[in-house]
Image 1 (tube, rainbow, N blue to C red):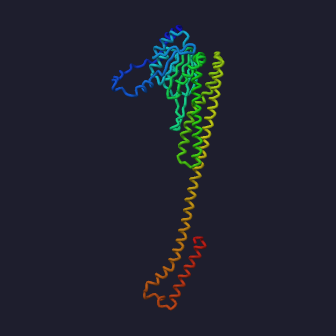
Image 2 (cartoon, one colour):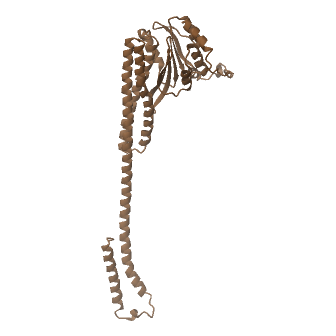
Length: 385
């Protein structure tokens, strides 16, 4: 233990990459007891250490309150293991961890930046694992994603959590309740974390399946707002696929590493079980994406059919209206003919010979009848009547 610490101290002088944190601004004066805000515990949880503990032979032997105390006690424990959990740590805290445990600069930068894809990388004796956890929010009917970075060394495990998921306190309780598993070392802790992340996918898969069933009902029920819900769920499935698909290859690589370095066979079996669950989840997510794509196609088809039906109904209504207009126009023209004749002969001019003609009246009536009958047959022939 002491040799590793001496090598770490000597290498720390050569790490020119480490950015020394800028002098921190003076903290604001803390309010007195009467002014203490009620959200103080939340502020504490948002800062750095969620929990740190030292273990020996699978049992907790110490619970340090700070990173410095954790480092000191680990140096004093020749066969101990430190499990440090951080929640959105500061740059200074990550740099102190990097200097103490000789973490690689690229891994530390990834942990600082977050928003990384799931991956597994080895830097010397240290494994660096990035995981994307997920949880289903029933109230909002959406999937919330978190990011977890895990550093695994010979005598330490460091978790850097960005987001609410996963609940690592439950993982710690599980491991502490099975000291024979925890005694297997950091690899067992890594397995437990992977198992917790993968088990957390099951409620998400169940919630998404319910959402898809509801969407199918809404699609065939003609709900106009379903398209937006399909699109939002499809985006979540893309994110879910990005979280689960790389895990398949990562776990196979990790299993190969466990076999290479002679990790406990029981632990290898546990890891294979996690790999099976990840494969099943990844296949389900792929199926969800395909199902949503099919549902979106069906919804587009139904919307198009509905629009076509509405257009056809409008066209039929317009055709019927045109037919009525034709009939009205035809009868108006027929009635206009006798009106025109009667109007002309109703002007009573002296120089209108038909007014003094004995056959004038029969002639006018006959003329009106001929015109009306002729117009009727013309409009009837053209199917206007």
